[in-house]
Length: 115
Length: 109
Image (tube, rainbow over all chains, first blue to last red; front, side, top):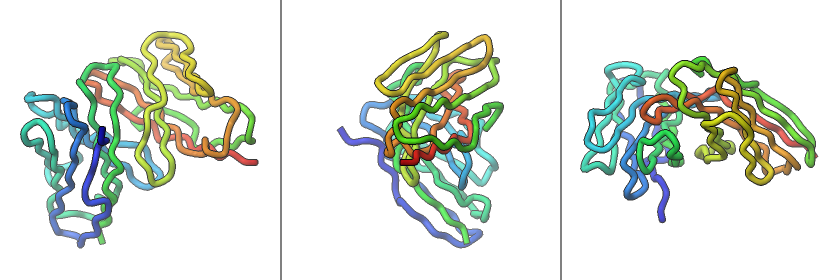
């Protein structure tokens, strides 16, 4: 079946603008994760959704960042008043469950550039 | 990464063996993932270790020592297509992964 998809693939925005990044997980996957990867850096956890439970927001770097997941499927990551340090590749991943052995499948990412 | 250390870069020759070491914080540890990431692409799953010992999967093997907070990924019979970054990721509660900075492996002819 189809893998994790993300849109847009690239986003260029001006400092201070809001952006929305979209993630479509693999159908039937109950867990969804957002990470970001700055140039030459490892992946940084942002937020995690599992079913109908309250999301784990412990990785969000500031209150300018928020995410929601509608209907247990599609997720949107919103960054308000973007700053240049927000420039990174934002990766979404999904897994069948949140069990510790479940592999996370990653989407291709959205490359965000804040001018 | 958060208390996860792996070398930044390694170079090896086609056909050779390379071992990528990873050390991590042991508290709250569930398991250890290795992912491969080619430049500009999404990470793809390579291996998962939860018990001590060696897990072999074709040319790739992964080892874990829980007591030492240590893992390694062994790449055998290196091929040019193995040139990529290899990400060590420590798993804690809720399947939340903390990644190391990645090890860029360059395979030379």
